[in-house]
Length: 431
Image (cartoon, rainbow, N blue to C red):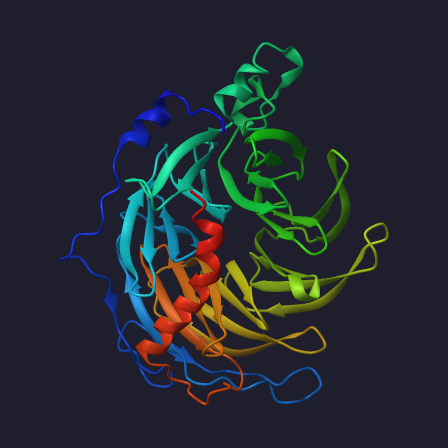
């Protein structure tokens, strides 16, 4: 494990305090088919599909909770075993323990907002506005459940390259034309993270995509991926493909060959559009991209790795304003927009998306989304974070619930979380 620097050691010594008993999350239970009050609403607006067939029907969904514990806008969410992690522009990260959604811990370090979170192998990776990735060890055996163990690039990585002239490259930032920096460090805010096959991928506003080996946290590669800020990165684990999306209007596919990544294809090049988010439906090798023009576009990957090609599966006008985030769970796609709403879509057999509803309640743009499937109740939990500093939790049933219960009681929701956590805990808490 790479050694943390001096600042990291100070942060590691600060204990994580449990949530005081008098503080609790704000819950409101109600059927989505009726009014949630002044702050939440759900509308079903399913248009007919392209072939004229009626879209799939959705049962009643629920607004379960509103979580208010961040001093700044909520910038990213991640699911980490039994925890929901949320981060904000206030540089703090909060771990919410499920199923009661009470604050378990607050941690954080660095300057500026936390831009992205990723969890894998008993560790949490956080991307920051100061251009560094921080690594947190997750452990139930220590006083600090989320303990800072390194900041990338590590001190060891710096020392191995700082005296080599070949390790320096010109800065990509517009106001730093005459500055040079090590190629292993990002020269601007890190906007996105993805973990795949023993590697951590970080995308930045400095237009690069960097590859870090998770075993020793060493930077292996720096890719000049785009001509503008990299906004999103996602991995198709089954196909071994990494996707990147940028403000330059392009979505690209990258494949690792031996020691380096190569451009496998450009899925779209749309001038004047910033691609803000990516989501992969691994079961169909399909990737979705969310655009600043309100569109969501999906592509299917066909052919072998040596002769891969992509075909457009859908292109829908999802929102009247920019789509800022999206997530995929089974056959459902959720979209979050600057118009403060969340769109719910079902994937059709032909690849197109059929809208089955929309959820409202946030008082600011929806910046981030996460969803987890519950096989016990045939539905999913959807978590949305907004610039209004809140996180909202929703229950969305699947199409044609197996048990005929569209309004699962709290006991059934608890059973759902326990069922999910039985498999998650084994891989999460390694120490």
